[in-house]
Length: 177
Picture (cartoon, rainbow, N blue to C red):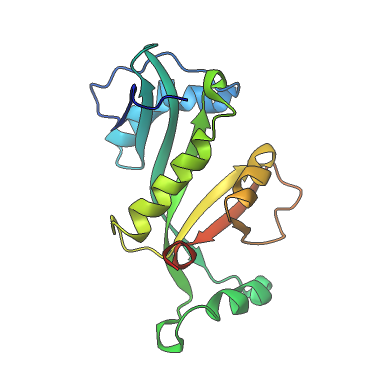
């Protein structure tokens, strides 16, 4: 796939959203109806990837601040997580950036664009230091869980095993190392 005709940018209030369909009504509606509202409310920033040769939106993702918080019912996970953090830096919560939405158009699926976007996000927060955070979190739809696992994300808990979304995380220290 030729990416030279692609443009990447953050959505602004005046941004015109080009044609987009990822096959999921909720994800489509967010881009068309909610992304600018989240921007105005200072709740999330949305970034789009556009194909200039077809005048279509290739993919988008939104980011917001988050944190991973100690859950007394999940001590095993917390102990495992804390082992990777110096004793004098251990806390009951750790800063994170959350992927609120991530979607790739059906027209561009199978081209590893989602993986490229996750690499960009990891790079943005691990090396460019856009915000001080240790983790990336996501509430992954069940169908997207294998994708996130393939990209190195782990489950935050087993409590949501039967839910329609699973809380997952990626430790940015793994990206740096």
